[in-house]
Image (tube, rainbow, N blue to C red; front, top):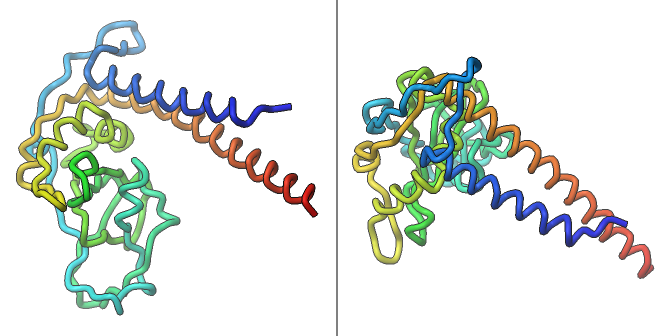
Length: 235
């Protein structure tokens, strides 16, 4: 019989493992080779403001505008996952004459405030092609000038890694509620590899993440079955 507790422990250990691998990759302690077993070029340091630009979320909205209309990305979607789950979007009424920023594939979103410095500037990347979709007003977007500079899937791992997170936490401003400045964020420098190495890194991390997610779903099903059987025993 499967021991669910042991499986949960193994799941946590794997999540810790991928976190450690992520840190070693983005601190360049682990390097990849190309198909010819040759080294990729050295990583280059770039300020965020050199490789993309920011845009604001929704403006001029009140509570009566929400619950119907066009999909928009909510704060919690960005806070909870490194990639946007578009099925969890909220709805907002957008008039035909309104000027609002639309999001698009490859956009990266950052939360602007939090209760603790360690949770400031949480990020998530949109990896879906969308038509009309917007962004909540408590976050802002970052749009790379080119995917040849910053690959979207690679970015989803880069911005949640401890190497970047350690830098962004330093930008937290406040005492009871912490905020982050877009201007200061754009001054941050990141080290990025060549496009080919970005794709190789993203593919490697994605395969590990997908495996962990499948196992997580399996564990959830086992836990639900366990609860069901326990309820049947008590009937």
